[in-house]
Image (tube, rainbow, N blue to C red; front, side, top):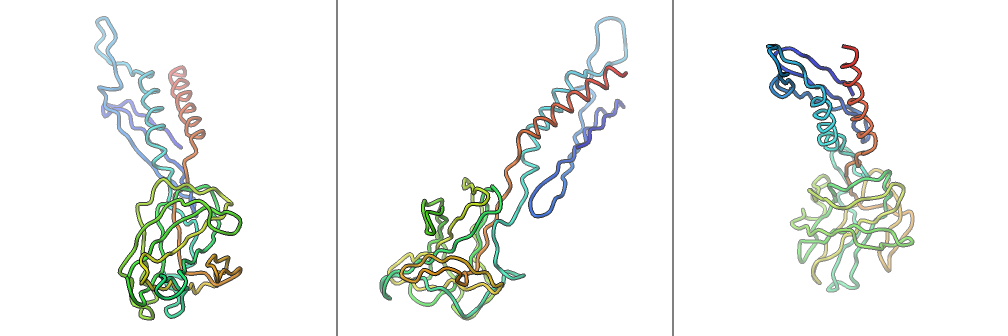
Length: 259
């Protein structure tokens, strides 16, 4: 993070660079101009020149860091993804998702592990329509000993492409919020029928992604998983931001003493 100031007539220019996480480390820079009227005060007496109000600047920059930085350090990241490039998957083989009109209700759930503590923002899944009601219920669960445990969230999807006609049409659940995953913990993504006459397919991945599938009476370990992705954001580290703000405050004070 860098801090620059100028006492020219334009005022003070604060330039900040914040590292952001995710799969690749990058940085975000922010420049804020503080007007002369906000950074100067006129002392009492006959003087006609203005004197920078360093206490004000110190508080202004600290507040700016604490308020703005948490939004900047949140970065998109992949929690789990088994799609091939272009969100492609196997067109003509799928896990069956069906209602009771076709036999036992089948609601396959795929296990995945969150690589870090993150908040879910989006879920992508490859579903296709076979017959009946063209809809399904997608849900996210905690792990309870190699099976889904507590429900974290659920979303209804509909209007899937007909089975066997597509290998790159993906259903996306966006704007997900309020669901935090812990690093190193297992979770389950499940697709269930919405009606007794629902029959859809969860198309398989083509990236050789295998894992646990909970789908009584057809549960399997080391099975080829349905194609899906879970995206999220890393949670900001509050303590480093506070320390950064304090360092800025000390730096501004030191500049004042040197001058």
